[in-house]
Length: 149
Image (cartoon, rainbow, N blue to C red; front, side, top):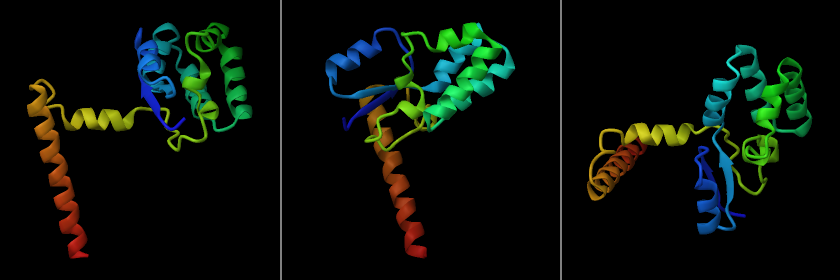
């Protein structure tokens, strides 16, 4: 598996990706998962256990944090472990090792969306031209900086 698609949990998106990219892996952004989690379980002490479990590199640490979560609120544990939220999509320790990105958040996508936020409502060709020009500007500035060194 060389392709991995990270996305927020949207009804129907999993199936669409599976139909179009049958050999691609899928991950869910933990930030969106946590937003839904805290709607049902607003206790602030659960936040730490959720994030520690999601970011754990090894199963032992994941299980340890999930056991803390279960001890504090069994319903929150059951909600996270529900089959609709398979842990191989959000828990770092279960990610495919051949994919070299182990991010559980969507910071890159958030930065890109902020970068194009002024043009997002424009027609697609205008949006693409704006992205092209911004990219050229970044490369040009990087070249100028490298030439000064």
